[in-house]
Image 1: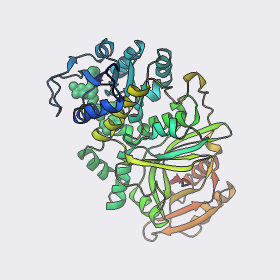
Image 2 (image 1 turned 180 degrees about the horizontal axis):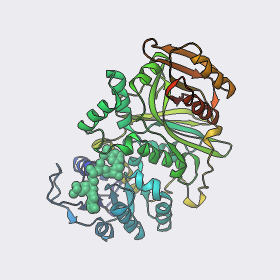
Image 3 (image 1 turned 135 degrees about the vertical axis):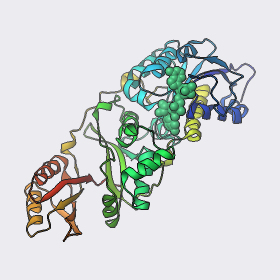
Amino acid sequence: MMTETAPALRIGVAGLGTVGAGVLKILAAHGPRLSTHAGRPLVLTAVSARNRAKDRGVDISQFEWEDDPVALARRDDIDLLIEVIGGSNGPAKAAAEAALARGAHVVTANKALLAAHGGALAEMAEEKRAGLRFEAAVAGGVPIVKALSDSLAANAISRVYGVLNGTCNFILTEMERTGRDYQDVLAEAQSLGYAEADPTADVGGWDAAHKLALLSTLAFGASVDLDGVSVEGIERISESDIRFAAELGYRIKLIATASRDGGQTLQQVAPCLIPAESAIGGLDGVMNAVVCEGDFVGQTVFEGPGAGEGPTASAIVADVLELARNGAQPVFGQPIQRLTPLRRMPPENVSAPYYVRLKLVDRPGALAEVTGILGGTDISIHQMRQIGGTPDPASVVIITHEARDGDLRSAVAKITNLEVSLAPPMALRIERA
Ligand SMILES: NC(=O)c1ccc[n+]([C@@H]2O[C@H](COP(=O)([O-])OP(=O)(O)OC[C@H]3O[C@@H](n4cnc5c(N)ncnc54)[C@H](OP(=O)(O)O)[C@@H]3O)[C@@H](O)[C@H]2O)c1
């Protein structure tokens, strides 16, 4: 309940693009109700972007204006800065630091900033007793940050995995639905605004890697270790891989997975096969989903829109409300000094079943050369199919039993060098659902 004496929480918004405008729209639509929930008035005081004259679909005339987001962060009539500029350095970092340095709270949607500087910013926040919250930075509107920091805190988490990039999921879903190839669907995603003009961060897996590094920290209480994430994008996935996988009961998704075993953590972003009948396998279009496995709760699944104006702004406003009610909490669910350095698990020691697609000369003995290499590298075959053949080269799809990543890579390198091999094999991990 709002009391007469409760001081207002005065808010500044740095960045008025997709997400910033969304925040202003929510505050305009629900301001009085949100203030009641917060138990104190939430007052938007000032805003900043590059171009004051730009039409943003929201009225900004009643707010103070700053050209410089750092000047906004330093204003003494701002208690909380919403940073929605973007970028791991530059004005976003400078503004967040300026706000935290004077003990003002920061709410951000910026995964690139936190994946690169989250530890240092959290230290600064906790030293100044300021809040730093980032629900919107991972899976947009899906409340996974709060779930891992609070709701699932009773558990030892063994694995967190899911689809954290809607652009890649849209492209893979469309390739499957229409039988079109990667470049064609990427161009469509760009024209629909689902993919950036430079799509590298999305399709190359880096956006998902930033988010995964934050999820690992929340799940395992270890420092943010972006360099420890092995990253592979979806650029090499062909329409035929998607079709072959479907024939075998799988779908191909860009899976971000963080798992812990024996005190070591594995962080991987890669296109994987996953059973079509699973929660992640059933995910279509731009949606995101995250599965958490805890020792007492078992498996929980969180699914929803991972980006866009409304969902992302919704997560930001939830963080504002949390800070208005409860003040600063540890940034990563526990005091920053308690986070342990992340001990990396060497990926070559990890075992999983694999999908391997080969393009071979269609002649007797070709396949025997391949199976000889697999057998000699300790990889046993679970299923094998030959697709096509005379007069075209044959595609052979093999599903292996569990194999060590290191063994699989060495077998693939040997197969690539065979005379009967017409193209490097495509090897994709099959993720356990
Ligand atoms: N879009 C999404 O669906 C989504 C989802 C989750 C997280 N995020 C994250 O949210 C953040 C913002 O994303 P967005 O999509 O809203 O970006 P955006 O549409 O490009 O907006 C960026 C805003 O920052 C302002 N800006 C850029 N450089 C500036 C500078 N040097 N000084 C002052 N203002 C500056 C721009 O000003 P002008 O408008 O005047 O050019 C613009 O208003 C990013 O960290 C992004 O990763 C976005």
